[in-house]
Image (cartoon, rainbow, N blue to C red; front, side):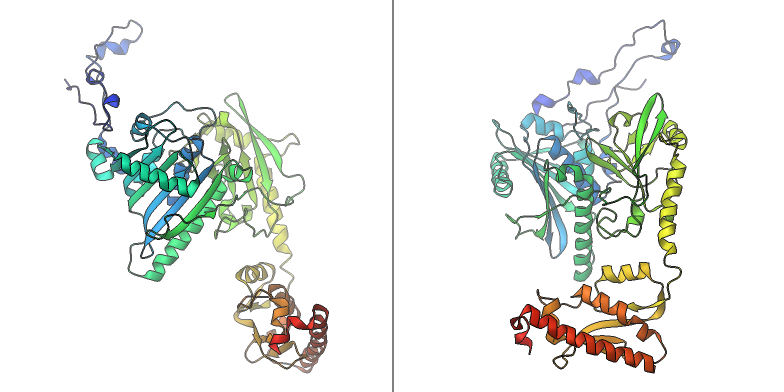
Length: 540
């Protein structure tokens, strides 16, 4: 017979110790309705093994883990959350998430540090599994420290070391003086008397190499990805002022009171006008006696704005379903096996905002970063139809048609030389999407000093279009940079690019260049006079 097992060691608080009697064997009551009871000798309670701690958070990205901590802050009534990525020698050393929520007392912080503890969730809460704090933290760090202040209670602090917690669930109770000091720092940053600070040390998933430039590049990419993820995940709360969120990246010893950069909302449906007539359109899927409304959107073709793309990632990666729970975005794109991803479907996005479908037709993963579609819902999507008879497959076809029609416009255009130095990357990218480009050749658009009254010069041999730097302040009043004056440079590229595409300059080409130099020279002099001689006087 299996011996009854002892309870795990919990947080170091007498009022939260598990009574030993809960872990004793329970006699079996006879039941005449269940024939399987004849095989039962007794019932025992099996406590979780502390070793499960080592597997917590393995599927969390840094972005999803921090978003999980922000969920806890929002559930605690926070209006302002500050995320701080603190470094030493350009390596990520510490992560802090500070909020101005209600805070916790000793009993509440003990519960928060307990594996699997599920508090009494209120309608609208973002928490769900009772594992978020621990899973998010141990997925990326070796040490989790929580400091908290609640109105009418003494400030408190607790610390869990992953190595110890995975043996016996040990939790350290921290000094009241340390808790008060952290409360003072949080008050300085957020201006609140109460709230919570979650701190990670011993960061495991970060750049650890010897290259300083690689370390800075890694940190820059991670902070950009974090801002994009938080901006999309909480875009509804950010947009209507329910939440203020900022991210600070700074050295550990220099960031005590520094403000972070605000996170801006990124609306994945924030286009100005639809890419296809008749959309957005609601298609209804019926499954297990429930109707789920799927609002189908088609973005305008050739979109390259925030909302279509997220951070530095192109919009093609974000086609698919967008699923909300209590205004929090749980799934950012992906077709969840209801369709396949394809470049021609990159304009298609589907919004689902139905809390009742969650837990039945849609199953949320512990990281809250994706959904599993139950088979009955997959079947319902295949049979879904709108009031005008449009099916889900027809919606996908409409999105593909929109994409294909936009790209057809390029097929009749003559290949053009590639613009290189002098135009911003976004403009160069758009040129490539609108024009077929000649392989292996490019032109630069640069400034140099030329005589007064001249604005343009064509250096065919050097593949360079020169602009007169005497007039640079007219078109780049904030100061010059390599990619300044993009409007003027783009217009000049469109005017002159064909000159560089021939094998040599013919007589007609030379006549065109002379015409441009004459007219643009007169125009820039007139421009200078209309704006006032003082604009460019210093450059003469």
